[in-house]
Length: 185
Image (cartoon, rainbow, N blue to C red; front, side, top):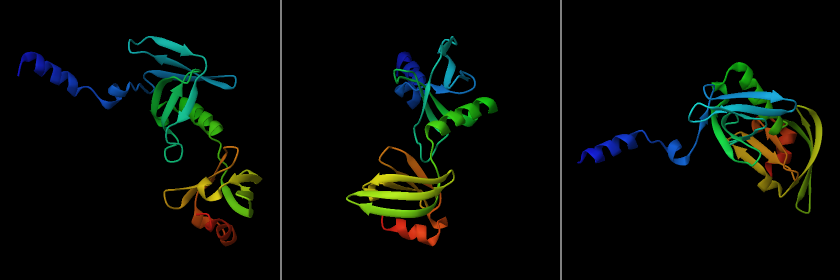
């Protein structure tokens, strides 16, 4: 092997998948988040250590059902990814709480505690439930396809408006609620 080949191999060892994909991981060493009014902004350091202010950023969960506070994409107004937060917990407590609050606001998901009524007509089902925020009603199209079972006992229901409702434990539902739902699982 030539000296140039060895040098190239050594350089390639340091090359990671994140480098190949152009992923910039954000943590407390290169990112600071702030709230201004109703919006989240950020100061992000570039590869030269220069800090750039972004008055408004959007947070998007990469794995919203299984890892709600990991792999969070931070994007600008043009939907260009500025970086990826590996774990919200990597930030100081105040910033982590700010990020969690923004994600919870964006991905608001009431928890279904009890199903009062579930009636189906012409491909639509009409739900009346008791949730952690009170009594709610919503409509679901193609019910079986609008229920996603996650990790065995957990499920999500998606209504026609794109809202999500979570059932943290199917086995914890009362017998009548489960009976109304089991046909669609």
